[in-house]
Length: 112
Length: 111
Image (cartoon, rainbow over all chains, first blue to last red; front, side, top):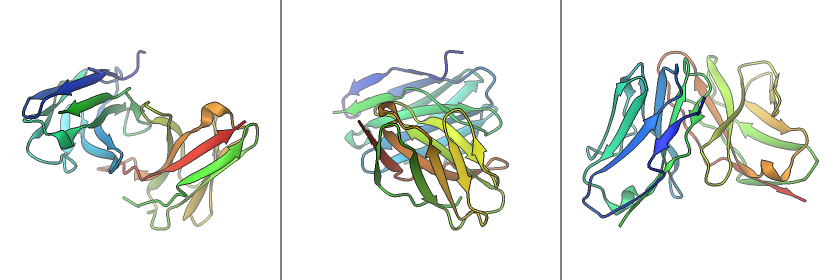
């Protein structure tokens, strides 16, 4: 298995632009997690899905952030409009039955 | 979910055992102890987890105290490639849960 795949690996955009981050979980996994990591706040859970349904989005910082999982093999995290304080590394992870989480390589987002 | 307390950094000589402590005094009966590590610029990597009994796998051993209020991750023969941030997490694996990563312990393995 290729593991969790994230794209793009790096994204540089200007303030006010829409940003879409993508994740392909490990085949057969039924949980998908989105995390954000910054030096100041560490690794934060933003939202997680079970069988494509959002279960807990209390970590989503504000309405500018949205996440979808249209099917078992794809999820997106969208920021609209983006702001410089959104600059961070965003990780996607998946797991089977909420056991071990397998993380992707991350997307490094820079908002100018 | 319970919070954990870990030392911010530790050093270990290459080839020696690295013992990383974690306090989780408010852990609930149905919460597991998980350990992950993050090597610079990579996504976190699962190491091991346990509920009550000590656990061992090809990467490490996990020792959980009888009262479950603390645990120790043991890397039996640390190598330079084990230099990373190690996170101790407590979480349920049934029902709703949140995985809360603290600051972790930055382990430096020195030659």
